[in-house]
Length: 190
Length: 382
Picture (cartoon, rainbow over the protein chains, first blue to last red):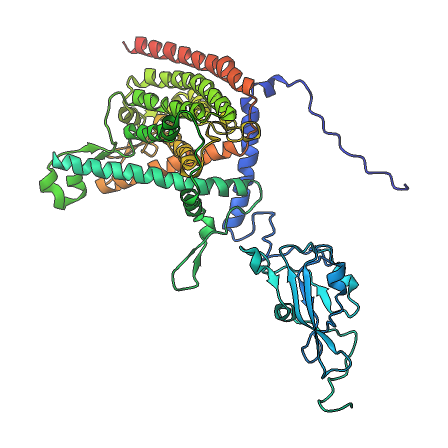
């Protein structure tokens, strides 16, 4: 409301061509000169070891303004002993709009504080829409999304399921916000 | 006799090898040059892996051509249920073969004397010499136009036999466009024929190694600058490339006259187009850029303005001529690709108006002026 928009330069080609433009050839040569000049400039940059393109060569390079909060590949956070933080509550699988998360819960009698854990945790990346609802729904900060998406493209949709071990291990992260007591020694309460 | 066969087999192998290499490399050059012109990187993901190692040869995407070829060979060769299957199957070859045949009369080097080049063969070859050209025909330029005009039959056959409306429209456009521009092409070259007094391409090249006005090499582009420009424009139109690609305008006609073609048949049309780029480059080089000779150069060495003569050994002359021809052709190909990625497409009425109301009068005017000038020069000399 307060700031006036900056005045824009009006581009307007005269509807009638001048005789110089209607002669056609000079303007064609001028256009060829422009594109040829750009070509020679970029070629010279490549030949002198610089980069002669605006393209960001994505997986190898990332732009400095690459979105910090980009939602990329999922990570299952670990407890200090390397087991998943996940308590298999199925909230992420329930909220997932694409229904790509499959969890099998199992019972761990040796950890009375967290007796339920996922024996199977799989995400089907061929259908995932990267909406981030699973991360928001998780009560335990057990699932996160990092901004990178490495190694996702595949030639076969059946190989785009990522399992528990890969989600835990490809970019190991621990939940540092919530310190954990060590797992009690087997055989009794501490 | 048997010596002739050997030499011409070598020539034919060389010519076909050069054309195929140009066709393959130009697909890469076109991609890369377009990318560099528009601040992009261009195709660079295909690689060859040396077997049993992890060494990947990327080489700036040079192997994308191989990937293209493999893809086209392995794709399903889809055939429409056309009522004229024979014409449908023959059309790509009718479009492709004449393009190759045109090269037969284009000289790609000076005179080859095998005895002087390889002393070990002196006994066998004696004093035979061969102009480096597959067919030394004194009707060279006429052969070029005869074969060049045949490609249109391929396009028409393809469009007609596909029983597809887009193909038919494309073929009709190709027909009227190519006939119009062939006329302009012929008229622009007539001026050159008047000046050189021959249609033998090798003779035309030899006459271009002289000097005019005391310092300029007697290249066609200096004698007939106007005709050179018109020839280039008409040749690009003949090849149906942007800005004259109305027959295959993809936003209007899908792929024009080869809409119904797939796999390697479609590849033949594309390959013919790329080889025709090289052919146009070779023709332009031969007619307007002094052919296989460097400026001021002839078969024995350099004759610079002022009468300064530099003699060259025979082997050096042969190598320089072969390389010069290839470099000139490559530069002309690169220029055509520059045109293709710079200019927007015409509207169809503009294409025909451009041919009949702009280029044809200009070519006729150029021809008239040339004829008068040649007549005056002859009158003065006589």
